[in-house]
Length: 339
Image 1 (cartoon, helix red, strand yellow):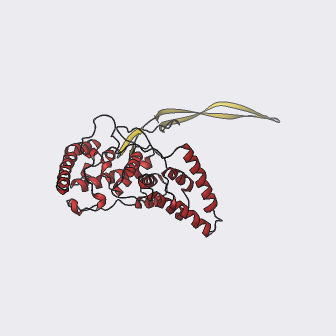
Image 2 (tube, one colour; image 1 turned 90 degrees about the horizontal axis):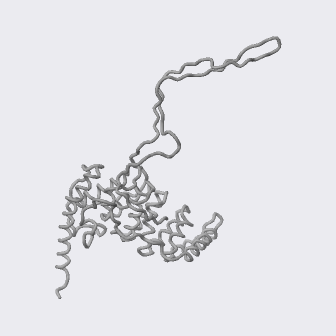
Image 3 (spheres, helix red, strand yellow; image 1 turned 120 degrees about the horizontal axis):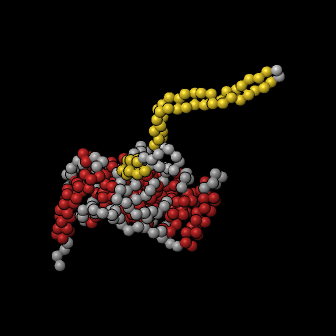
């Protein structure tokens, strides 16, 4: 897994719509359901602070939570890299006996050191399902840093089945570690990670990510890769003529071989640069699903218009969340014991 700390631009990097076998977002309760009837994963003691203020007019969207730094130090990481490389070679090779393999799986599940999680993933990704499951079980028992590791796997791993298993082990509602990984994924330059982060936000109902998702639905940018023309179209006529002759001499014989030249008359249209729009279907679908449930109104009609989404967020959603936060504060005050 990679820890990402990239600045967020006004228009975030997004990826094209993909059809990948990924876990579907958690089913949302019907619109208008009371807070008391909500599953725990949809409840918040108070409305997240970033949903109580309008979107910034300049700069980027603030992070949901601070950037995570890897626990431990360089010495710890080097030691864990060597330990898990040795474990893989000793316990998980083709010739390993069932007993040796079971011993290795038990060692993985017993690991609780957050500084070891990245080393473990680098050494064991791509292994057989039992090894990957043991690794994910270790993450699931590793507190909030383990939640960050699980969410990072759910975003970054190329195997859809592994991403699904990591998502299944995440706690609901999402912890700060999960929010940090989603934030990192949305800000990544890897288009697939951005899309996966949007899907994960919907799967764990991370309403805190709604501002980021609004601006992560699509992005426009130059498609020039520095390898010449992007395309060209020629419309014209070609005329052939004898440009030269080559004498060919033999015994009692002589001849000439013509060299044919060509003249083209017409127009050549060269495309040297262009702007590409990349769409994130997973980000958009999660945004619509969460906002429709949380606001009680169908937001699908807003479509892909970022300006319309920003206007809806500032003038409809923020006032709604402020009222909800006031109600939650009153309910908490009423439930607290009198002094």
